[in-house]
Image (cartoon, rainbow, N blue to C red; front, side, top):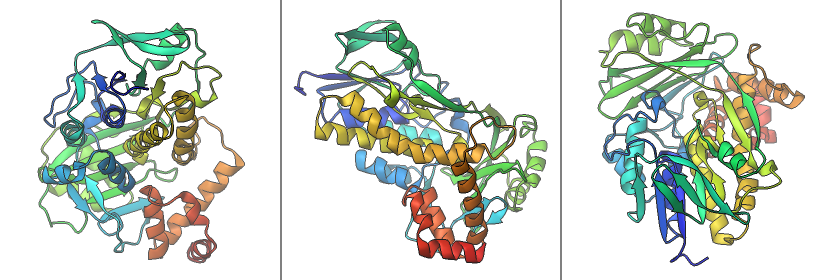
Length: 427
């Protein structure tokens, strides 16, 4: 492929699309990002990202990979006010009611609002990438089994590679079906969760933590993610099931926080000055599109981010998996530009699998959530319960869990003989 003559199109200008575009800009003479929404450089909420007003998690592995793909990302994010800390020492983790024992580590976490993360990425990606807002894609163009471009409301646009990064509501499967290709198998799990979020004024140093993560679980189906963010603010996101959603009425929102495991968030929201009204977001199902199982796909078609696999956001994996997928795309392009579609989907499925198993396995702990409950899933959930109990008293186990949760260590390391002995002894 002659990079001077080639062109790539990315459909969707959020985090996954920007990371894909950054990778493609190293191999393609021209990369164009299309989005139906506005793409401002300032950190503002966008209509096309309704979830941006709620808590987001950028795991330690995620910000490491993004900074490798987009040099200067970390420095710019911190320079714009993002809050940094040690995820083992400076975050409170409540897992199944167990407060993880805190301790120092070499890990670093960064807390920031979704609009700031996006705006920093837009400013830091390669200046050769062309951003085209207010552009709606209506279909794909193909010839002899290869994509040749996309159709838009403004006319056709040629491309050698097209990346679907259009998010949860993506049209990629429909566009492929219009060209005569089979639909990718979809695995779906619907946890039926609702977010409600509110921002409060933060006095730095007033608390000995920068965030609280309280996972919902069958014994207490109320959770939260509260974190410090730029602008001396707390962003508090309460999580509940759809039949008892976190309220949007001031006062009732704060009362709801009393149901959480641990008193810290309730204490915070009843004392801090509220800066916004509570806002609600209903979370759609988790969906994994199994493109790697398709017998036929047009060469040049790729998918990334929520267009490939959208997770229950309560586990905070989405942005990090998008970064890892972009990193793997770079590996595919470095190795060989041929058969890119088949190689990419086959490899990225292995990257997605552990995160998918973790999040959906956690979801099906609830009796009302339909989905497979294999012997392996039941065993892993039981083992994780013991990990959480041990983490409350054993700092070493807790640190390993935080490393796994941040994508820095593979989950299998929890099954190392010495670690298993600590878990069994302390749980």
